[in-house]
Image (cartoon, rainbow, N blue to C red; front, side, top):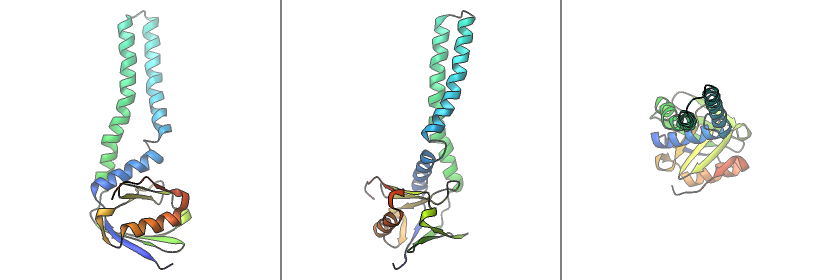
Length: 178
């Protein structure tokens, strides 16, 4: 295979979408993590409700405490999604050109500050939706966010097709228009 590469620039929206995908698969928005946090909040709420029952508090206070616990559990998810992820994105956003070259057995990822080569089996996953490819090289690092509208050199569709072939079942395609 002849190497095929693209040069692109991240934009803030596509990076935020990629960070959200990354965190839903591996991080704080993963269902198991959200359920653990909610379980802690609701356990504390249950203990307080039981304490109020033992103190023979009025039923309205117990009901209000139960509702407050549920609202706090929902608020954790909303604040995490709308504040924490946006802040991660804003802090890590770099308005610079990046390059990804696909070879037969590996990819080469080049930023103005670094250059790395990774074999396809080392990549965690790739996810494509609505013209944004989220490429996660390492679980602990920010994903590469390739937006179809920000490709400066190369063809987004060709790049997507080759990457999909190379990654196999670790490439999730949800469709959508670019």
